[in-house]
Image (tube, rainbow, N blue to C red; front, side, top):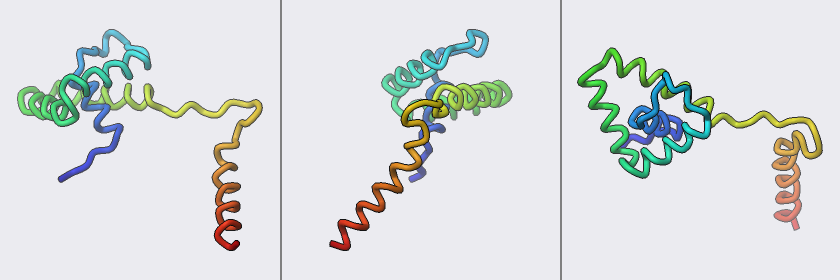
Length: 107
């Protein structure tokens, strides 16, 4: 059985959704459409719709999938940490915890 990444599943869901490129959906609309498509069709149902379109209309399916992958990347991108209190701690904290865990296991 093949396993897809979260971004591949999301792209399939956008592809299977009613979203259109011309509507220029916001990140929130994309996230909502992904949730709705996965709820309505399931992950395999979204993939099945993608496969059907690639079989029936490969020229337009390629364009739609490129767009779907692009909007998924934008809608689900991790926000860059901004300046201010705690900025950058996400990189430091795992190291601090690793040090604590090593000290505990030595005791």
